[in-house]
Length: 398
Ligand SMILES: Cc1cc2nc3c(=O)[nH]c(=O)nc-3n(C[C@H](O)[C@H](O)[C@H](O)COP(=O)(O)OP(=O)(O)OC[C@H]3O[C@@H](n4cnc5c(N)ncnc54)[C@H](O)[C@@H]3O)c2cc1C
Image 1 (cartoon, protein in one colour):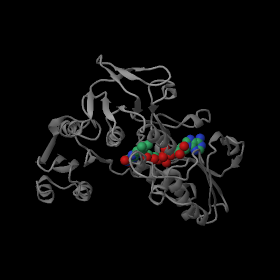
Image 2 (cartoon, rainbow, N blue to C red; image 1 turned 90 degrees about the horizontal axis):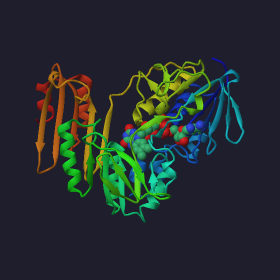
Image 3 (cartoon, protein in one colour; image 1 turned 30 degrees about the vertical axis):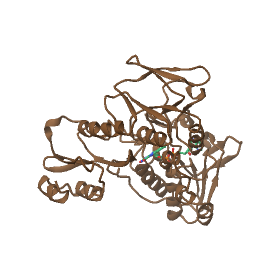
Image 4 (cartoon, rainbow, N blue to C red; image 1 turned 30 degrees about the horizontal axis):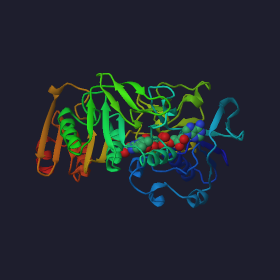
């Protein structure tokens, strides 16, 4: 491997940070540079919803401080997005007209929140949270807003709804599917959580979508496909993400929903790697933190001359809202017919505890924990070792 190779990383999230650290471990003499669009060092993005109701604890929020990057000889350039990549010259150019030459390039530009209505974010009161600056804006606005509508009943939508409710707003969640958390819960558990949400005074509009956003310069409400008109002065979109692929549109790299990568996080252009929300591995853009972290590590290691293969972690979700916790992992009968599955359930209505485990051919395939999630470690281990129904009954007190 050549000496003093130049590794450039585009992005400023967890995938970028992990890629830089892994590259440094692999090659102590490489020049490593992170080029980031945001004005902040990489931070723990999942905290942004909690930030709506809590103060920011910088030690916990930032993935590392300035000194850390300095000690690891990682140069971070903030607030200056890359606007152009020229693979033939192995060159990238930033908005402020600085250019950088690389031997290896890692793309970690993450994703943006999908908004189906063009220019709607220009209306006062319409938001979507992806960055700390956006979360700050929403937080400021909650001091004057009274009625909020959250579009999207997934993980982030529910957490945001709970945060706004706790700030004293009247909150309605609109979900296109006829139940909440359609990706994380089975139908029984969705109903269970829906009751919990309603009991906290949050309104649900399920099986309907937004047809029109009302109000001229500021939002005044939404018209739904079921005919209902709901007034609001704060509208928050939370209906999924799309990979940030605009930057690579004309450079001849293979993309689908994201930038296509193999298990080494190599793209179709030799010397260019991709990791995190921006990439697509085995037809999937994961859009979650643990895969982004791991992919960053793999990309950084391989870009610096090492050898590491990516194995996707078992997908899991943890939600903390409505004074409860919900943990969902693995295959919970979402995409298959019911018949093949066996399941075990446990319910303690007084304590608001619910456990549901799914088995395929007498092997644990997935599970949902509501209320009491201290079984989550056992659940992860049980999935790895594919325990039987008999063993699960004992292990999970069912
Ligand atoms: C509010 C919120 C809550 C979440 N909660 C959870 C959760 O509970 N659990 C979970 O698993 N996941 C959660 N996620 C998702 C998780 O945060 C992402 O999957 C993860 O951050 C992806 O990391 P990344 O590094 O790939 O991309 P990102 O974190 O999106 O970072 C990409 C960075 O690249 C920068 N960038 C983009 N274009 C350029 C450019 N041209 N030049 C330079 N820089 C550029 C962006 O500005 C951004 O800073 C949440 C996300 C949000 C927004």
